[in-house]
Image (tube, rainbow, N blue to C red; front, top):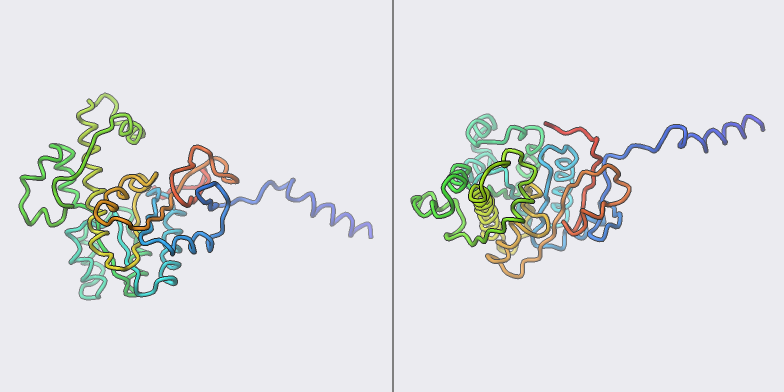
Length: 291
């Protein structure tokens, strides 16, 4: 009996002695209420377009993208289309050839201007789409044209050829500059210190043409289908970025957003994060990044 009581007391005390069980993430809704993955997936399945806003170097973000992709595929089957920021519109033919098994992976990898972390972070979703014959759209503007805007402004797009403009949202790109908002958005870029407001405005214009182009190719590839889009959280947080352009091109589209946040404590959602998205993937700040 004494041994049994001793074991029971030790078992009750063990959590305090050992500390809390580490958690890799928690999910919350837009009110800060903890939710299960199934609850989140069920809600997302009711939207026309789901945006997953990621932290590019967060392994949990990328794993959840794959799991959400699987859940959306279970919900919508052959009516699902996927797109992502990490693929540029002028590579659509190359992407189609790879997805349709017309070319091998090594040719796709060599020619598609893939991000450096593609093989670890983006390949799983692309491979899942290929294996399940889910249409995949390269939504982003070719980076060379975004660079034109960053260096010379939106008006420089007018000088591009008609062929080039096929890979960009219709011109002119609606844009209004909010210095305070842009300064906050680019605050993490230490390289901006000392640059003029004009430089910041062109940087904001480059982001705008990316957002507009992604929205344009999403709208062009819906046709009654459900669309899942993967992008950096900057492009869909606060229903900003891509979302206003999408609603301009495709009014009355029902949008749902997910964002990934890092917090010191993930037992509750930080109040500062409220309002950013419909659902949150909260990851501990100490969780390792992929680069």
